[in-house]
Image (tube, rainbow, N blue to C red; front, side, top):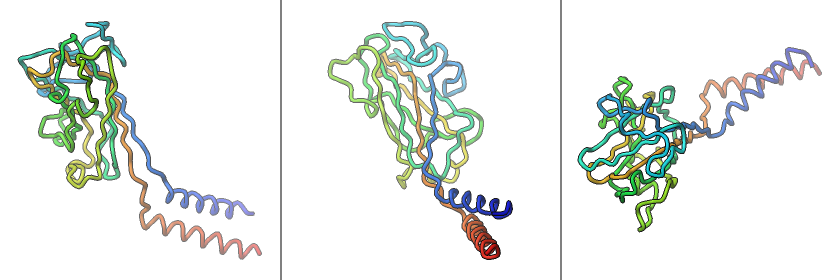
Length: 232
């Protein structure tokens, strides 16, 4: 087989493989550090993070964990994940997070919430009107036992379904915007609350080849066929 024939054959194989691309995943690991998370207004949230061992809890990832034992103020902390933008091929997102009691005070997990968000205005900061899709109270992540408070950490999981027609991902304004996250801890309800070690795993749909890809395959296969006949 000539070099030209070998090269053409390889191109045909690569084109065929391009049409059979499988669903992929995007994984984001966030250890919830004060250097990355800010209050909704952009101010530092360092006072709400703990390092070392505090009231029996130690960070499960990184050096800090977020906690809130305020009974008078609502807290909203936000983060953007630079380099990860909403795609039209996103199918679902599974979120896992470590949940715990900060000061051994019982708290209501349904009154503290998180949402994914999109930096719609491109200012690098997430505002409450930039949250998208389903809202998760931490009771969604984990059904807490009656013997609240917890002892130590437990892991909770929740899933976004981007294929739901009601999901904001259908809004073209979201596509291409930087992914973010928004935590809302309601006053008088989140006493003793702590979170750490969040992972977001995004599943993308199968790649649908463009018409030009099919044309490339057809052309490459036709050329291979002609060259084989000539060799004969």
